[in-house]
Amino acid sequence: MKSSYKERIARRLTLVTALIFFLVFLLIYLVASYTVVLSIDHELQLEIVEHQEEFFIDEREVRFLHQGEWEEMEHAQIHLNPIFIEVVDLEGNSLDRSPNLEENHLVFSFSKSRSQKAWQTKIGSLEVRQRQVPLFTSGKQVGYLLLAKSFADARELLNNLRSVLLLIYPLILVTLYFSMRYLAGKSIEPLEVISQKTNQITQQNLNERIPDSGTNDEIGQLTKAINNLLGRLEQAIQREKQFTSDASHELRTPLSVLRGTLEVLIRKPRTTEEYGLKIKAVLASIDQMSAIIDQLLALARVENGQNLVKEELELIAFSEEFVDKIATEKGYKIQFQSEVGIPIYVRTHEKSLEMILHNLVENGFKYGSEDGVVFFRVGRSEKATIEIIDSGRGIDSVHLEQIFDPFFRVQEAVDLGIPGTGLGLAIVKKLAQESGISLSVTSEKGKGSSFRLDFNEAS
Image (cartoon, rainbow, N blue to C red):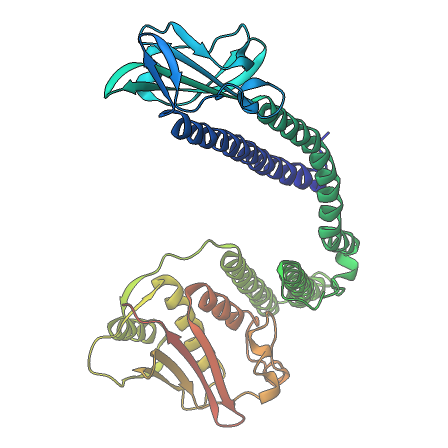
């Protein structure tokens, strides 16, 4: 079973802090040890400076410049800051030593005499730190002076320090772990609230939101992100419900016509002309359903498609070819206008742009003026643009945002019997979004509409 998130946070923080404390305690111990040793070595150096010139050797006999040297307290006893001194000849044979050495001798080493560095050794059971320096008489080396100072007090101090550090280390870690665990629990409380509230939101209450903490920290940003996600989900589900309802409604109408026509046909025998008329009505209903299904499939492909691959396209040449093609195929009167005389290069998906323009031109002729002319204008202001302008019925300002919704049709167009599924502009909007094209529309009732596409030009 996996541990909770706050447990993992507490363990990780405790582990990192434990390592930091270990390094700090180790540094404290090493600094204390170095300081103690440095202090003793300094005292040894002072003793060497003080005593090195007081001893001289005369025919293997040690003599003193000041009588009573061995009677000094530091050389006579071992209980109060003792200094141990021994004089040896060039071979290391003891010539004389301080009384506090009793039967013991200091350690003589030829290698230590060359380096003259202090080292730790033992006099019996007593740990000491020792130095060894040469002795000269009349400029000639005649022996060595060995000095040592007790390390017992320093060792006790370092042992006590180590024991204290080892004792408080686990206590600190235990205290730290529970403190980290408590603080981690308090830190993730807002996440638990968010999780509980999110689990309570279902498809039936998607309008609910997680309470905003009012801060702009990570928790506040997470709350806003989840609320934005819920908003998008709510809109998507509402659109899907509306789409399903509209699709059912749009398909129900031609199916009802189809069923009614067939029921009339089977009631009694009909003439050949009557059968022909009814079959044409049935075919018209089938064509209407086929158009709706084709548009639904096109819209589904746009909504579920992957990111479109954009390529560089010369907009003026592409537009001229498109206008010539659709004018020839459909017999439309399209007036092409180019406001610039140099090529305009944009990055877009060619097939998507062709479908967008096809639907907009179809829409212009379907709802256009009686003279049947649509203006196709290519230009550049801040960005490369295409405008498709008709001089038809126009659109009320209240409907300008709705015309891009699937299956939306202005009631006037339905009453006039203008054919359509209400999906063309929805497909245009989706394709424009996928292609990174900005789509806008302006319209005035009774004067016509203008659909504008703004492109990001190729660099």
